[in-house]
Amino acid sequence: MFQPASMTIDLRQMILAIETAVSLVGMNDTNHGKRVGYIASQISSGLGQSDDEIQAIFELGMLHDCGVSTEQMHSNLVNHFDWSDAHIHCEIGYRLLKDFVPLEKYALPILYHHTPWEKLKTLDLPDEIKRKANLIFLSDRVDVLAATHYDSDILIVRDEILASINSYRETYFDPFLIDAFALVEASEAFWITLSDRHITRYTWDMGQFSSSEPLSLKQIKQLSLIMSYIVDQKSAFTAQHSARVADLAKFLAYRYGLTDYLCDKVEIAGLLHDLGKLHTPDHILEKPGPLNAEELAIMNQHSYETFEILRHISGLGDVAEWAAFHHEGVNGLGYPFHLKDSELSIEARIIAVADIFQALVQDRPYRKGMTEQEVLEILDGMAQSGKLDVEVVGIAERHSAECFNIAKGTSEKGNRNSIDLFAPLPETVPAWC
Image (cartoon, rainbow, N blue to C red; front, side, top):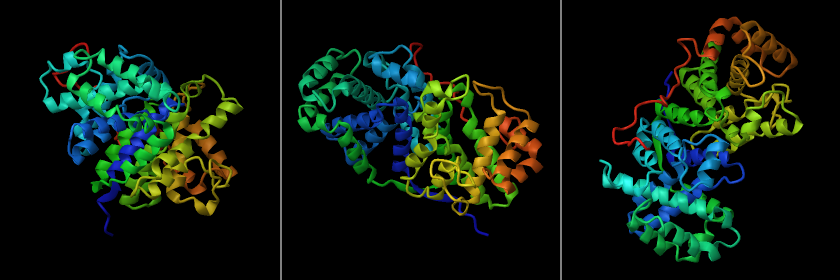
């Protein structure tokens, strides 16, 4: 049987999905990436750059914080003009994108997007990289200065914002870019667009500039792995969770008899299933004990958030549903949709079993990882109660030793999904960066 080697997806919409996921970390402010993309694109337009260059700088702005996973990091970045550890998320973002060909052009600008201009301009880098990095830095700091004023007194304080940016002329920001910013910010429309209700519409409109292209399944898996790393780094207790769920789900799908193509798609869905947890407060994920009713209600929103992030990506189709339905129950008592037995595909059922299996073997703040026998007893009970698919659980039981090793990351058939977040940085990175 012919097996497709690619899925045609809209890369722009995948970029928007990454921004949406990362922005959830801001909890009460989920539009920072959108605003930075807008500000940078408006400055780029004011400089008379081409439509392609404007589109590229918008995407760079959307992606610039892809190395941010925790509330604490986000808080420090938005509450301090020059946070001493800002370089950490720059380095993570660089490593996430540098080997993914469709987005590798953004890796270096992201690496340097918190580097002050007076230091950046001395580095052995192409001028284009320096300008793009500093443009994102400028746009990012403009948004930090303005964020508390949108929807209120932004048109009153805009002169103060421009004066503040000007005070960093030649030190933090390229004077050429500051002058370009001064021209575009003179328009009231520039500032009004940054309010929540308008920036979401602007981003939607930009999303209509399709960049559909056939990506190999390997590329889609690599992009999905990037997204899974962002969410898994949110807590030390969930590190590698998505990657191991993906490995285990693919193994179960293969043993069930699905085609290689469907097994690959199940793996992608496994990588993406927990994206919505980026909107779960850190203190809930790290709580060293059972969640109370209010905390549990917040936690139970994450699979719907995953659905909202993924369902807008043209070409992803059923993968978005398989990922989002991982807490649905065969008995209709799961969440968040309470789907019926007939509405749950085998792929979604496989991911549900893989998710629970891996979570049980992984150390969590309130317990140690369970033994193989403990895991099997819990899975069997959930199958008998109608929560999990009996046949899929049966496969896990018949191959329990291998499933356990995959879930733990100690099997050769598992642990295939990885990104080296400690890969060496370019030699041009100075000691202070």
